[in-house]
Length: 353
Image (cartoon, rainbow, N blue to C red; front, side, top):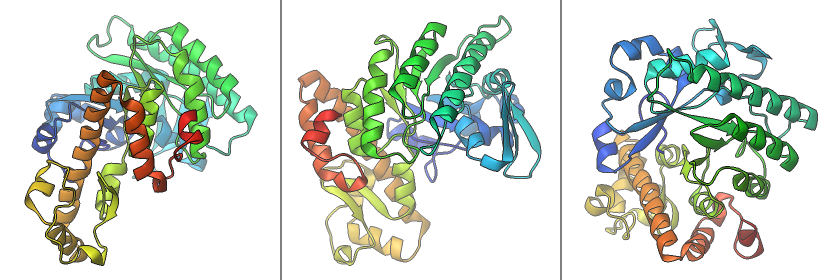
């Protein structure tokens, strides 16, 4: 899912998202609550009409954003009391009003409020936050099932547990017992080593129902995606393709490229000869480098379009590889190309994924 945090995938229009065949994107309830506000969006016909995008939208509850405020948030059983990072006003998120917020936004898939923990959390802190997240999940599900609630939105549960296999098993059991339309694996890719993330994913994904979507939140590199699919994950979101584009970097079939590199200054070759996006079909890489060096905003737009196409095309390749039984070869290909992205390398570590 391309990330459109504030009802926009940065530098890309809704029409361009359609041309990329991006069937679903992610927006963030926390940011949209603060600006322009869910009531404004509801009055204007919901998120899709507001942003002119006809595809599906998943909204994150904002739990990660709230808890990243650290000293500016107070957590108790009721929910999270925090101050807006925009104007300092005091707000409260509860398991119930976060569901109501997303009902007003009109997204297709909604997420419950949870309490993720960082890689430096103590075992006691992780256990407390995980149990609270699971209790909040039950309250969110109850609110979602109320007769006056919306019936056209899918609610996913979120498995937490920090970096303890036992905590994650307990959380998965509790969340599955509550019963959700899909299941997310949260609290990974928060600063832990890649192999720790792999180990936690390997022990969590098999505990989730095979007939429901499994969503790995906030991950990841091209290697992360294909390796995680092999463990049973179906859905991903990540800011990397758009963020790196704004920093003049591109994912390609031959590895990551920094287009400010002088080697591209006189090249008439496309950015990626294996890519069918307009950026690669129309412009030489020398032109892209020129735009980047001149700090023209078109550089970010063209690279964003390419990177999103690379990611969506990679997922097309994953689906084809599953059908053909060639997924291990694709995993090895991505490991070889993107070892420098922080993913596990080939061989034993790849096998552990």
